[in-house]
Image 1 (tube, rainbow, N blue to C red):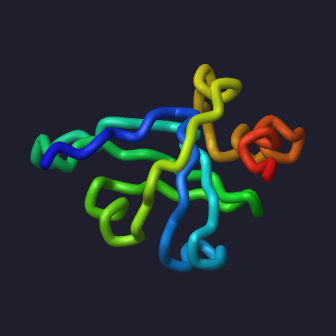
Image 2 (image 1 turned 90 degrees about the vertical axis):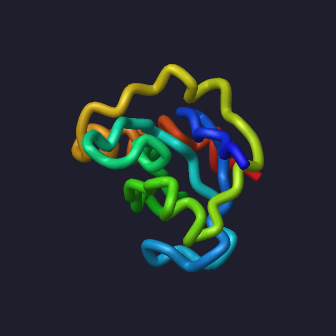
Amino acid sequence: MTETLLQVGDLVTVARPCMGNVENARAVVVETYDRGEVPDADRHGATLLFPDGSFDGFSPEDVRLWGVVKVGHCDALTSYRFVSAGRLAFDFTEGRFAEAFQE
């Protein structure tokens, strides 16, 4: 079975409690990246940002383990470019991701 790769702007839920967030918490993909020298099937990674501002990187194995499921897409974030953790925190504080977390 081929898995769909997550893309920047994808909205997901995370089935298990993660990063201090409750089960089925919503998150948005803010970065995708190549994990380098790992087998091809597990090369891709994605950084997920949670509504409380916490974030972490997820490998394909992590996606399966934590039960990450794509539930939508936020077009306004498709062009977002992750630069650094500090910039991500600044952008979060400035409300850059608010649209992704609207109910």
